[in-house]
Length: 555
Ligand code: GLC
Ligand code: CA
Image 1: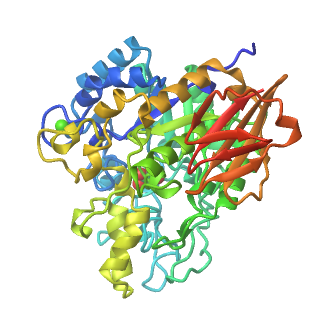
Image 2: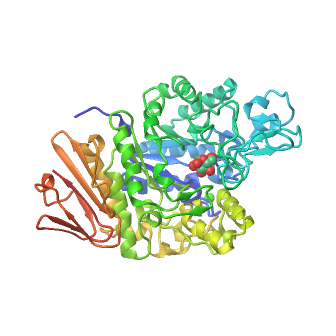
Image 3: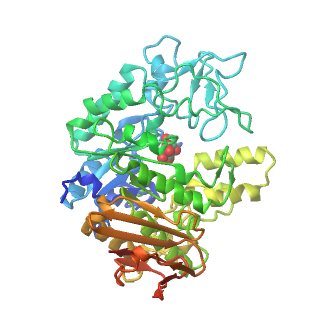
């Protein structure tokens, strides 16, 4: 067998700590809560935990606005809790990845507070400060959360760049001091025993120095892409980070890289930079720029998007696999069907088969393994996410009715994924004995860990089997990939080959029964699939797959 890096065989589980488990009843999930649930994660079978930020932060963007990279936010616990979490996780064979958020800091970070004091102070060049143009911002860029990307600061009259909220000023990576500070901070965590990083918005850290106007959009702002993604010095920076930090440890690293195409992946995913990156092509299919509308994702394009990454990266770069995370709506509501229990459970399983039989390192987002769904908040006051509130307000100002603006949130809002983890059918889904910081999804009475543990046919037990299969069948890690019947409007079919072995995966993305004529090449496939869900029948050379069914055969 080929000797392969451990992170190529691993399954990662993402924890959004605020919503995972609250150990002290203040309504906010915390580090001790994660410690208490480690045995659940061992039971699930995952290898690595990626924990979203729990550093000191004013919490404007739920921790993605960091004011001290070396301190723990009090609502999440203490440094001692963090050290205990690392130790206990390691004892149980789990590795821990932290979120590295270094495209920007909080505006309450001491670097920024100093930087804004005067034109020539020694932190000024840590950020992007520019003069305005005729009483207007230095360029036309839109913030990725909506609105303009520049904010004028009364102290000096200059503007600073914020690609996200105005409380998240962008760091200037062209300044060597900034880079050294980041590398020092990474060593600080790695010396504590952290096993890797998920790098937030890492494709944005090098900007085209002239900061040119972007292409004008219907909302009157200009698009910052392509002047901020894959920038001129990006790979130089990542290689430097690799030399100075990453190469000194045995780590798992994944970059969050909007605006990156499969052809660019091998520039990131290689021994001199990162292990792998997160692509966005399949996440943008239901997006209508500038982000305040929604359309149904096109199935053929979904297949193409995922397949392009499979094919282009094979033997060149390593892929990551995901359907959802804390920034995306719930996958079962988005790509599956949550309208009935039967459809929900089947489509959750089918989506899992579709993704987990592909090549790459799978990432499971908390609750995905239960088939947790989107939530319908009563109104905008129940929504907590800074981006959602921003896009909602912009829509209202443009004359959209509150009802229609909420409809977009039901499909796209990030808070869909941030409701409390559903542990059991008790108050607040067993997440907290206090009042949760965000509303609990009422469907926790049906969807929760406790009932699913005892049910052999649950989505949870299905995920456990899929994780097992990855561990037992090298073809899942190593095999190549071919999309079959690319134009098929209902089925997602692909084949993986490894040596003499073939793995055939067939997924029905519709609520109807679909018949597929089995091609000659596959007629000798065994009758026993390695995994299946829904109604699967084989007769007279036909494969008949029930609503949201899926099946994987090994030949
Ligand atoms: C990433 C994070 C997201 C955050 C943004 C700004 O996309 O995943 O939650 O809002 O970066 O840090
Ligand atoms: Ca708590």
